[in-house]
Length: 472
Ligand code: GLN
Image 1 (tube, helix red, strand yellow):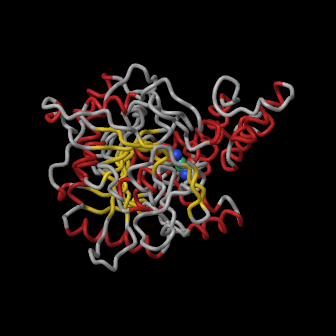
Image 2 (image 1 turned 180 degrees about the vertical axis):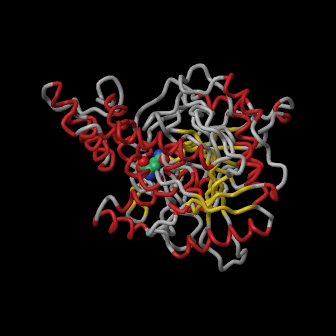
């Protein structure tokens, strides 16, 4: 059914049992589960989850929040969903997102904007692109959620809604059955209210998958057992990259950052200012890479074999395909396809290659800053005085209202890209990063979710999660 909710068109499928006032879900999944005795001893028994609707599941639809796939039924079940079901968890819904994962606000969805549950009586954005996953977790519709993080899409909505959002090392979690946006960056991530749940879920999905060619093989995974473990916060070195102190960073976010550093100092951590100059080039490199990869990935949606088609009108094959594509992709997706095709066309120069260079240099600089090496690019010597983790705020400014979003977008669409400035470096380097709610003032007045981002070296996900647990 299609409902009109205060100017937002909401399409609902099977959302009969729970009124979803935040528009967090695109569809509900009917539970097939009958708790058997055997099941109750599985690690995730008794938990429920929602999966971002770009993760394939054969029951119902897998839409990517796009008109192009609004009637698409996937024949596949993504490996991550299978692993979670095997661990005893129950998929209860498919979460809203920015179309194909492109956005930072979860407004650009064919199924309408997600409303942030952290703000009462105000329509503020939940952040994107995994905004539905974040809103479902914040409103306690499920124990945890799966999202995807290409440039911050798990961390940013988690920060805006006041939950935890974890993006593991690229390649640790299978992407088989995850519909690609930008394949050199796409990473499945976890959103939850509790760090213990994040750890348990990660344990269930942190596996090599031979069906995913980018899945990290066992040989490399076994090397990770030699990585340092968190023994004591007192022996931990926390790096503060100066380049994150960007002009766009609001006073509010600066304060959260300083407060966190003070708390860490009290816990006995060594705080160290570091320089990672490539961070300044990361946002441009990121948008060059993602639009090129998106243009290439999305060329498959021609509406001929599946997906939206408008064959009722006559025309040549070319007319039909271009009509299908221009009437079923939203404005942001079309913009990325155009930008990407420009980037990849020979007349425009070698933008993609230049962006790849920034990425390599960034990894090199991280190798100089961290105490361990990037497992995939490790020609440098690790520094014993290096950092265990890096710390920054997750967002530059607090979530805006839906009206502010539309005004800002009208003024200049680039305004929306700036939000990603703090999250894209970890994505480009493929290193693990987490956003943690850090409510210093635990009073009812402190209503705006405060969030801090912690980044660790490649493969050091366990250290990152243990450190987060100590900080929270
Ligand atoms: N906002 C970023 C983008 O639009 C990140 C999206 C994501 O991580 N999926 O590309």
